[in-house]
Amino acid sequence: MYDFLLTKEEKGLQEEVRKFVREKVPSSLIRAMDADQVKYPKEYIESLAAQNLLGLRFSKEWGGRGMKWTGEVAAIEEIGVLGSGMTCLYSLVSICGEAIHHFGTPEQKAKYLKPT
Image 1 (tube, rainbow, N blue to C red):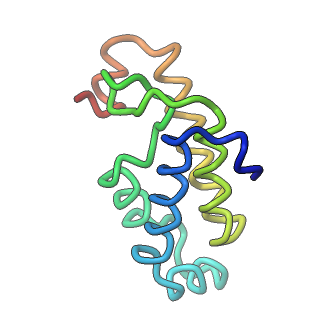
Image 2: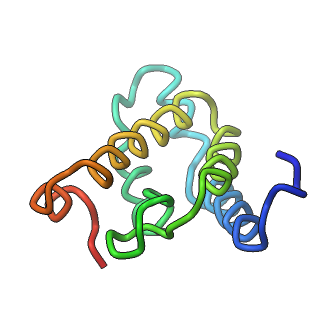
């Protein structure tokens, strides 16, 4: 990514995700996923959620950071060093969450998104 496109907030997010990838995602998990020994790395998704790294574009009301696409892309690029499996998984969670965030009923949002 070209640094001149990133705001100070987005650069901070980029470093936060980079640190998360280094410190919270063991290489053994990546190897296990590559070997088809792990179907869905629930702990990885839960760790992302605990760090408030999912739903970056959601409004703050629903647990997001209210970021633009550039911030989301910066996060995806950092996760990309883990391989396409982790990147696709992150993207799928984001895409499904985006649909609920924009088009879901209040009940669906309360059930599936993390209100603050």
